[in-house]
Image 1 (tube, helix red, strand yellow):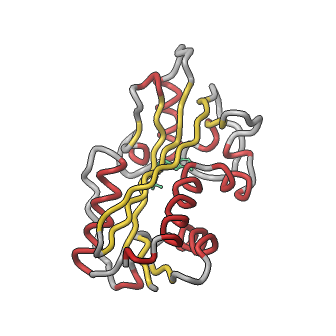
Image 2 (tube, helix red, strand yellow):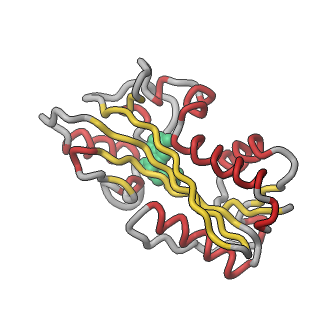
Length: 195
Ligand code: IMP
């Protein structure tokens, strides 16, 4: 059974395929001949991931799932959220995003934050959403050099290392994306009738 993961990020595809096993063959956007930019104009992670998955289903008639993630900071009313990639403007720049985040949290005591992922799955039988959350706090300065995005300022709850100080395996064992992906994979493997 073929299923499209609405991304061209081969790393993400390999990661999910490894959890999924052989029952499903994941294909990228390029592999289904989709070269156009997918619509992503929603104001929530739920809306954006649904928009992308529904676009692929409508135009290519292949079961599809799409993900959208963001950092939600309590003291900033859950910003940058769905705008995490372009928080400091376009084109996206991780260093500028972190600098703006730390500036906006200057003298702010409440450092609570979470990474959240929403995955939307669309097939002929309907639409389903899966959420993954990892709670933590925003540090006052960067620590570590692995990962991407806001990893170097995010300390997950119960850990001594930031996401950027962890190996990829350590981060993938607890990350928001991994939690949402596990929920999706469990669902796919136990609901064969949705195709
Ligand atoms: P995407 O939906 O996975 O492309 O994530 C959107 C943006 O959220 C990224 O460009 C990052 O700024 C931020 N983000 C999402 N996941 C992570 C993560 O695991 N670590 C750090 N930043 C992340």
